Length: 114
Image (cartoon, rainbow, N blue to C red):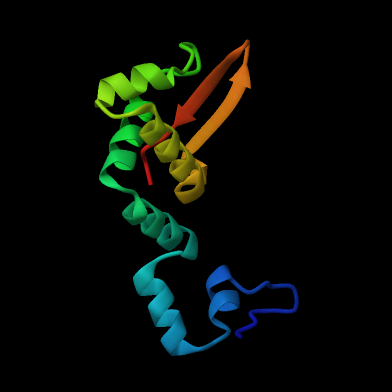
Protein backbone atom coordinates (compact mmCIF):
# COMPACT_ATOMS: atom_id res chain seq x y z
CA UNK A 1 0.00 0.00 0.00
CA UNK A 2 1.37 3.41 -0.95
CA UNK A 3 1.87 6.04 1.70
CA UNK A 4 2.18 9.66 0.69
CA UNK A 5 3.26 11.03 4.04
CA UNK A 6 3.10 10.35 7.72
CA UNK A 7 -0.52 11.49 7.99
CA UNK A 8 -2.08 10.25 4.76
CA UNK A 9 -4.70 7.54 4.72
CA UNK A 10 -5.05 4.95 1.99
CA UNK A 11 -7.85 5.50 -0.49
CA UNK A 12 -10.83 3.17 -0.47
CA UNK A 13 -9.49 1.56 -3.63
CA UNK A 14 -6.11 0.92 -2.03
CA UNK A 15 -7.69 -0.52 1.11
CA UNK A 16 -10.02 -2.75 -0.87
CA UNK A 17 -7.35 -4.11 -3.23
CA UNK A 18 -4.43 -4.28 -0.77
CA UNK A 19 -1.97 -3.45 -3.54
CA UNK A 20 -2.92 -6.37 -5.81
CA UNK A 21 -2.81 -4.84 -9.35
CA UNK A 22 -5.04 -7.57 -10.84
CA UNK A 23 -7.69 -7.07 -8.18
CA UNK A 24 -7.39 -3.30 -8.52
CA UNK A 25 -8.09 -3.58 -12.28
CA UNK A 26 -11.15 -5.74 -11.59
CA UNK A 27 -12.48 -3.17 -9.10
CA UNK A 28 -12.00 -0.32 -11.54
CA UNK A 29 -13.72 -2.22 -14.34
CA UNK A 30 -16.62 -3.58 -12.30
CA UNK A 31 -17.38 -0.49 -10.22
CA UNK A 32 -18.07 -0.28 -6.54
CA UNK A 33 -19.25 -3.32 -4.55
CA UNK A 34 -22.39 -1.41 -3.56
CA UNK A 35 -23.29 -0.76 -7.21
CA UNK A 36 -22.64 -4.40 -8.06
CA UNK A 37 -24.96 -5.52 -5.26
CA UNK A 38 -27.70 -3.14 -6.43
CA UNK A 39 -27.31 -4.29 -10.04
CA UNK A 40 -27.52 -7.95 -9.01
CA UNK A 41 -30.58 -7.29 -6.83
CA UNK A 42 -32.30 -5.43 -9.66
CA UNK A 43 -31.53 -8.33 -12.01
CA UNK A 44 -33.09 -10.74 -9.51
CA UNK A 45 -36.47 -9.00 -9.62
CA UNK A 46 -39.25 -10.82 -11.42
CA UNK A 47 -41.17 -9.05 -14.16
CA UNK A 48 -44.09 -8.43 -11.77
CA UNK A 49 -41.80 -7.18 -8.98
CA UNK A 50 -40.19 -4.72 -11.41
CA UNK A 51 -43.59 -3.46 -12.60
CA UNK A 52 -44.82 -3.14 -9.01
CA UNK A 53 -41.69 -1.22 -7.93
CA UNK A 54 -42.06 1.21 -10.84
CA UNK A 55 -45.76 1.70 -9.98
CA UNK A 56 -44.96 2.25 -6.29
CA UNK A 57 -42.26 4.79 -7.18
CA UNK A 58 -44.64 6.70 -9.45
CA UNK A 59 -47.47 6.68 -6.89
CA UNK A 60 -47.91 8.55 -3.62
CA UNK A 61 -48.70 5.95 -0.97
CA UNK A 62 -47.55 8.28 1.77
CA UNK A 63 -50.50 10.61 1.35
CA UNK A 64 -52.89 8.01 -0.06
CA UNK A 65 -53.08 4.89 2.15
CA UNK A 66 -51.93 1.64 0.54
CA UNK A 67 -54.57 -0.85 -0.57
CA UNK A 68 -53.47 -4.34 -1.53
CA UNK A 69 -56.90 -4.99 -2.97
CA UNK A 70 -56.65 -2.00 -5.33
CA UNK A 71 -53.11 -2.99 -6.32
CA UNK A 72 -54.25 -6.53 -7.13
CA UNK A 73 -57.08 -5.13 -9.25
CA UNK A 74 -54.72 -2.73 -11.05
CA UNK A 75 -52.31 -5.53 -11.94
CA UNK A 76 -55.04 -8.16 -12.46
CA UNK A 77 -53.44 -10.57 -9.99
CA UNK A 78 -54.48 -12.09 -6.68
CA UNK A 79 -53.80 -10.20 -3.46
CA UNK A 80 -51.43 -12.99 -2.39
CA UNK A 81 -49.20 -12.19 -5.40
CA UNK A 82 -49.03 -8.54 -4.34
CA UNK A 83 -48.08 -9.48 -0.77
CA UNK A 84 -45.39 -11.87 -2.04
CA UNK A 85 -43.98 -9.25 -4.42
CA UNK A 86 -43.89 -6.59 -1.68
CA UNK A 87 -42.12 -9.01 0.60
CA UNK A 88 -39.62 -9.89 -2.13
CA UNK A 89 -38.91 -6.20 -2.81
CA UNK A 90 -38.04 -5.56 0.83
CA UNK A 91 -35.50 -8.39 0.66
CA UNK A 92 -34.09 -7.88 -2.85
CA UNK A 93 -33.97 -4.06 -2.95
CA UNK A 94 -34.30 -2.93 0.68
CA UNK A 95 -32.78 0.49 -0.05
CA UNK A 96 -35.46 1.17 -2.66
CA UNK A 97 -38.58 0.60 -0.59
CA UNK A 98 -39.88 1.61 2.81
CA UNK A 99 -43.12 0.27 4.24
CA UNK A 100 -44.49 1.72 7.47
CA UNK A 101 -47.71 2.11 9.44
CA UNK A 102 -49.09 5.57 10.23
CA UNK A 103 -52.55 6.97 11.01
CA UNK A 104 -54.17 3.53 10.87
CA UNK A 105 -52.88 2.79 7.37
CA UNK A 106 -49.95 1.22 5.56
CA UNK A 107 -47.70 3.75 3.81
CA UNK A 108 -45.17 2.87 1.11
CA UNK A 109 -42.34 4.95 -0.33
CA UNK A 110 -40.31 3.51 -3.21
CA UNK A 111 -37.66 4.42 -5.73
CA UNK A 112 -37.01 2.58 -8.99
CA UNK A 113 -33.55 4.14 -9.45
CA UNK A 114 -30.65 1.73 -8.96
